[in-house]
Image (cartoon, rainbow, N blue to C red; front, side, top):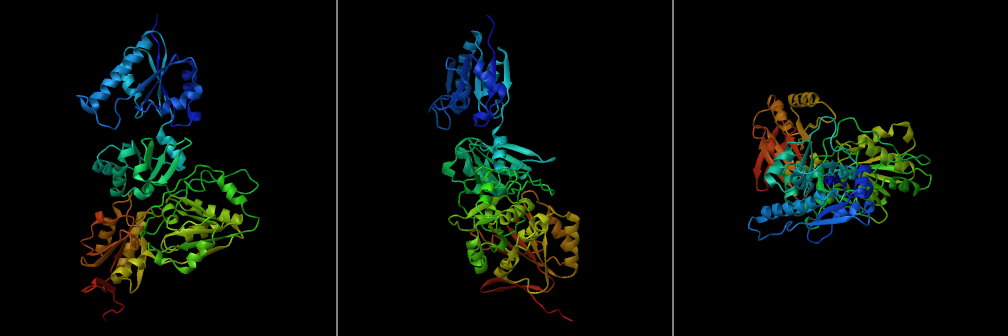
Amino acid sequence: MSNGKLWGVGLGPGDPELVTVKAARVIAEADVIAFHSARHGRSISRGIAAPYMRADQLEEHLIYPVTTETTDHPGGYQGAIDEFYERAAERLATHLAAGRSVALLAAGDPLFYSSYMHMHRRLADRFEAEIIPGITSVSAASAALGTPLVEGEQVLTVLPGTMPTEELTRRLRDTDAAAIMKLGRTYPGVRQALSDSGRLADAYYIERASSTRQRVLAADDVDDADVPYFAITLVPGPRPTTPLPLAHSVRGQSQTIGAATDLLGTAAVSPEAVDSESRTARTVPSDSSRVEETSSHFSGSTGEVVVVGLGPGSPDWTTPEVERALADATDLVGYTTYINRVPSRPGQRRHASDNRVESERAAMALDLAKHGAKVVVVSSGDPGVFAMAAAVLEESADPQWQGVPVRVLPGLTAANAVASRVGAPLGHDYAMISLSDRLKPWEVVAQRLSAVAAADMAIAIYNPASSQRMWQVAAMRDVLLEHRKPDTPVVLGRDVGGPTESVRVVTLAELDPAEVDMRTLLIVGASTTAVVESDQGTRVYTSRRYQR
């Protein structure tokens, strides 16, 4: 009698409809179905495979002796697990030697953080074995997020959350995009690594991707106590300057915006640098039909789009005019962090998205207004300063949005907020320059820095650094030192108006790029900028008088 065959069957991330045709066939034909579980006995793998199983099949339930708890095994945790795999392999070997085929189930892919590989090492040298790949949780989580994980030549790094926080931080800093597995009890350390690496604002948490219990949250909005093992954190790679095409939902046509009402994966904003974040958790559905539902809620009349600035952090800095517009809106559109700063109102729809490109977000707002919605597009600071006003107005020039009213309501800028904390460093002529080279080449940025520095103007520096741009601050400092004295005052304002506000004054020569991130705004003084120590602390002002 010939031996049976071992099948390593990848089941995909959770939805039984994501099981491949081959996997379903092998499950249905196998003599023995084997699967793992913890001591509670509930097997996710068996639950996924159940629709394809026969009633007369033999089942081998392989129960781990230990998962996260302690053990009195003389070899410790690893000794207990190794012994378990040896015994489990022999149980399957008995069936294989008797000529029975064995389908060993594996959630996701059999060779991607799966227990199957331990059985394969112990059995494949004795019995014929074949692996059926499955959709990984990384792919399912990316699909749930509705945004590309990597594009072009970007690098994706898959990391286990069980790594030491310092090592996880280092690897997050060194990659374009990341997927962090094995969360559960490790999540506090993962969150810390995301924060320390400057990636927290761009990270998302996806729980039980593709299942009926799927949840998608901003990574910083997650309760540590509620994180299961079957969750993943994704940090998408930086978006290229050319936006992805996005179909618009137009009444009477079949096109819809994919996965876009509460999470518009391909939309984004170029935010002002200083902001505070709400910690309100938000479950994001993956139902693309809700855009059509939103449009059909209104009559055929045209609404309007109002682009507003919330100010740079504190609710006290949001103007009454903007508060009235927010109260009257039927729909809010914006970057998740900024949307979360706006109190929820019954019946008001919130269309939150990530912070990459802007045009799709603008198109969505205009489309909603075209079908009758009163839409407020939310920016931090002032919407006309490196934010959404220009994007909405540019998109509104398209003939399809003719007749859709667009208004812009100003807000307190991040530059003015930071300046106020130290006095009046922007008291004379000054320029605003963004260091981001996402939409313009660095050569243009450097040329503008040099021109403004040579003109002896104070400079407010927006978007100085991010998790993907760590070198521009040093490059900026070198350009400015060609025209400014080393003792030129520089103000570093981080999260001004927010809970972690900090403001420091250093000299241009002392400016340390490591102290600067995306939530920092810099003000570089001119030749007439002075620093005065007083009872109120360090005060900085730029005189309007020049010595003749």
